[in-house]
Length: 125
Ligand SMILES: [Cu+2]
Image 1: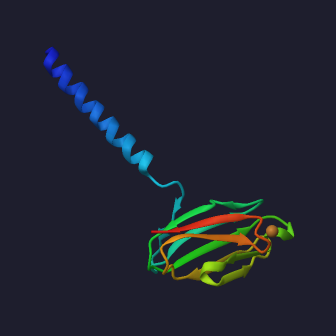
Image 2: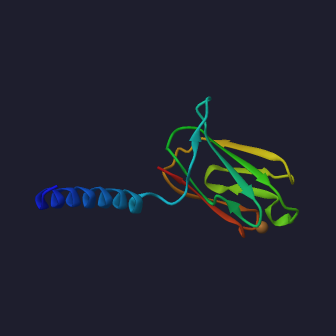
């Protein structure tokens, strides 16, 4: 390759790196719910000293199913509450509990344990 071609190649590579970097930085931090065959946006959430993942990203207007699995005996996390969607659920230890609702309000919505000590976020786009 001639020096000119080297410069062009380097410039193109730099552009590619910059593009990836830009989108990567711009990307939201959180778990994007996956759409299942019934059209639900689903996410599994492990309840153990907190919520994992603690940030779930969903699209506005499409039904959501959050599947909680509590793997601890601490009574703190016995109940999960989604005040913005008027939802709450008992989470017996070792059981998988689905919570379904329609995310009709864009924005960030919290879900917490009954006392508000454990916190997670649902981001509706
Ligand atoms: Cu609690």
